[in-house]
Length: 273
Ligand code: 5BU
Image (cartoon, rainbow, N blue to C red; front, side, top):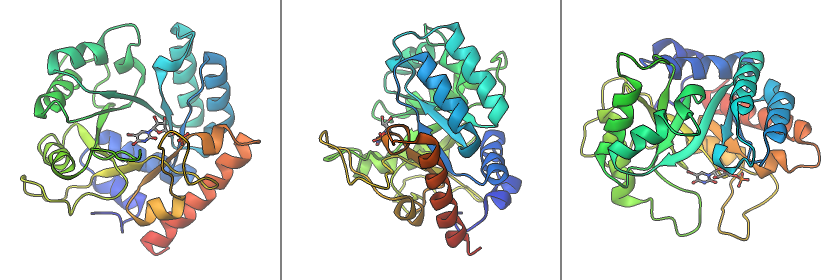
């Protein structure tokens, strides 16, 4: 993997424009933190995005848990993303046949393609899901150009996850095959060395997002398993995703700053800075 290189170096060489932007944002803000803003009203979401915006590279949403999703949610998120220079990642985890996911992504109530730079999918349905999402985002009349990318959900953090072995290998296969749309993985580690039936593409540089990051807890009562920023970044995470560790902290802004600092120090240690 390219995890020994700096974000700036990777921003210069990466073939994917959105990956380049992601690395540029990280470098500019000295942050590899993605906050998982799992709140349930638009006001809470926009309030968090505005207060935490300066300290994060990406905001991760579960837009379908909002009780009051509307045009205002989209407008608000987009304008805060511009104000604070962060990207938006809707953690929708598409998992269906190609024909259905195209509609879930680019049509429907949530209008995900309109506002979310990054989406993710499971490869449980097979290669067709990746092909379908890439086809939609790369169609000549797709309005958001190359400003969209996909992460393949290659592993999960929950206890007993079945996203292992052949499933994880297939994730790497499809990432290699659809490299112009696939930015990388949601996984607990770098996956370049994982067995894959597709040969590594010369210069490939998959971006690794790792969920389940928490400084003060080892897990929850529903099977979530946590690791620290240091541990995640040591295993190859380029972006660390923290939800409750930040938004449910007594002072979310202080918590965001703490994750930012620890995430950045761990990154500097990794690249030998
Ligand atoms: P937490 O509050 O930091 O536990 O929230 C974790 C978030 O990351 C939450 O939005 C999950 O849906 C998401 N997540 C995860 O926890 N584990 C995974 O393997 C994946 C996503 Br994929």
